[in-house]
Length: 225
Image (cartoon, rainbow, N blue to C red; front, side, top):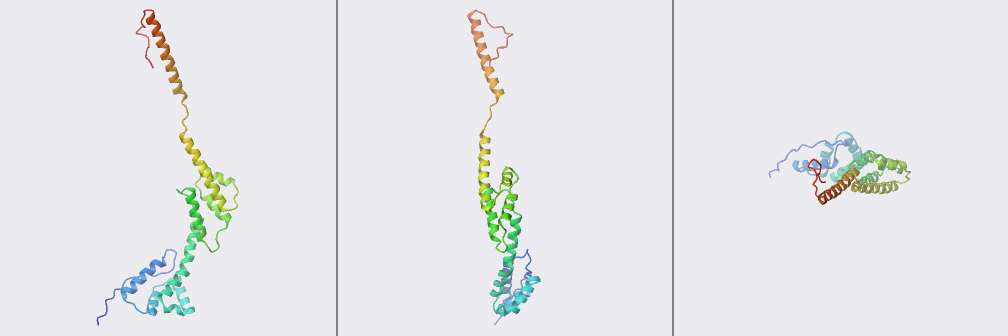
């Protein structure tokens, strides 16, 4: 019976660094196992271990010594690798993103929602309320709202967010009202008023001249407004 052709697909070595994705490596691993027609749980586990390096390989070898059942199934190895390496890295990224968070182009509500999401993503040694409040206030866009926030004393993040959203709404309403206000131009009003009076005076003068049988001199300026 003819053996199926095998295809040796290159697979990257997973070392468990921050820039590595264990899920992406799992996809590469599964593709390589299928292409090479690697069958049998123990052989698949051995192949997977041979493509680990750095801290990931050190961890896997230690796991194999203390938990022999890992060699019984590739799925067990993948599950243990994911739950051991991926969560700490994900939490580390969430903590870093939380401490560096800025409002940017988001409105206050969206900014607060993102901060809440990052805060609950950090389950090990979570940030305390004063830290969250400081992150929220310092991350706001420079302007009147940020100035108002620094003048207040908040004991919880939710109170700080509620105050910020209320003040932001008030500021937006004030700006909207200001943009609709059109101040009266006194100079234009004066020109219109003077022009109207001059027009009336010249009409009266013209009527008097006609009544007396006289016509105004052509040298006179009778430009009507």
